[in-house]
Image (cartoon, rainbow, N blue to C red; front, top):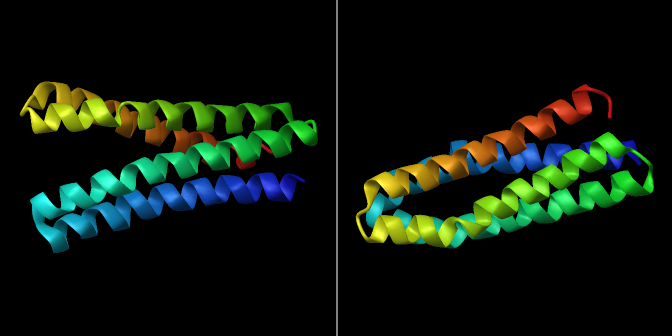
Length: 129
C-alpha cells in the first residue's frame, strides 16, 4: 500500500512540475498573452481538480493502510488544491477588471498553495510515511 501512496505523491509532484515549468511558460511563449490566457483559464481548473482527486485518493489509501501521516498529506493536498481552485474565478475577474493588486494577491496565493502542495508531496515519502 505504501508503494501506491508514494506513487500518488510522485504523480502530484510530476503534475505540478510539468504544469508550472513546462506547460504554462511554453503556452505563453507560443500563443502570446491573449491566447495563452484563454488556454490557461481552461487548463488550470483541471490542474487543481486533478490535484484534489489525487490527494483524496492518497488519503483514502493511507487511511485504509493506517498511515495517518500520509493521510494528512493527502488531505492537505486536496484541501490546498481546492482552495486554489475556488479562488480562480476571483483571480480571473481581477485580471479582467485590470485590478493588478488584487490579481497579484490572488495569483500569489495560488502559487503559494501550489508550492505547499509540492513540498508536502516531496517530504511525505522522504519522511517514510
